[in-house]
Image 1 (tube, rainbow, N blue to C red):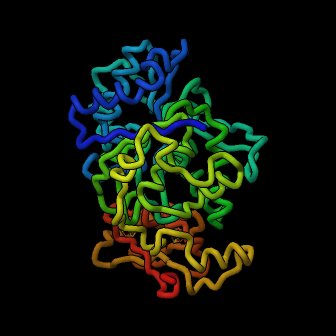
Image 2 (cartoon, helix red, strand yellow):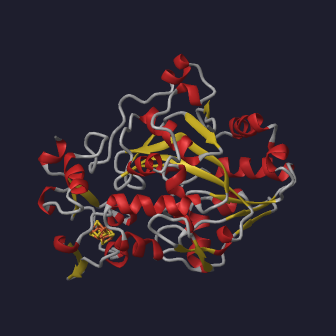
Image 3 (tube, rainbow, N blue to C red):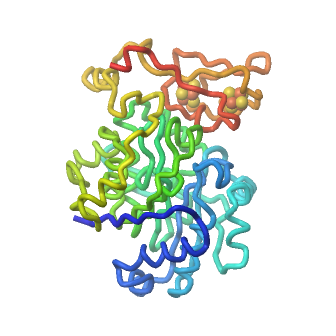
Length: 380
Ligand code: SF4
Ligand code: SF4
């Protein structure tokens, strides 16, 4: 069983980040020993949205810089690649890196930002539900990938950490096609795990110094969890983080457990901490996404799973638009995977009958005008 290393950190100051990166590689004998003679390293951050450090939604540029500096000193050749939500073009990549503070933070380092929007199809013959994926070319060609993700709650998948971050390997709008192809959460997370296990990820660094709670991954509230989790195994890393956050039934982890990709339960024994220290890392009052009012799979989702997907739609949480916050940009209609949002007289209208409850509209709405309305029965 791979270990998860937990470190406390309070801020993203240069000194804190330098010490953190020393800690990150120390259990593996330092960064140079960790690379084992391999040189080409690709860093996959989380730049899901055009939001900077204040959002808690995207990788902090100072952490990315500290990781790059450490790896450069160890002799690595580094690329940074991401496919954010929305369109995947050369210009959108450039503006995404700039908006998230990455371009400036790495401007004086010998690091390649992958701003060419190219993708290839890779076969995933061992996938349970998906036998091939279109993924972005730099990730397809990577020798080693370091997964630099954020610790966040997620309206659809409940938790977003290491294994969910690899969905950013799928180029732009292809993500929405996968949402449309796998509208049931169990199928969707199975697809995510098919993708994750196909990628050569050698290290996962989950940044919870400032993460997100509530309606993540982009419309939630920033929260200082104050820790960073590190592991060569993404599912172990996620299991420990979810345990610390008090999230029990994370669908992606349930699928990983069913495939024997991670143990049934994890505790301090899997980490570098004593039981008392592990307890001290726990977050006891996490604000949950509105779609998961009790931090566990809702009664309705359980019913849906039992009935093979048939459930009365009326009972499920659903997206609604706050007219006062809406700036009528049309992004929700553009990116809705099943095109069930219509811009009527310049205003978005959600046609509920076709909605697959993926919450992409909430994730991609710039002014957070989309909220989730929960039926009272869901709180059972
Ligand atoms: S994305 Fe948000 S702000 Fe833009 S039209 Fe949709 S609800 Fe309104
Ligand atoms: S309306 Fe929103 S939640 Fe429903 S399918 Fe479209 S993007 Fe997904």
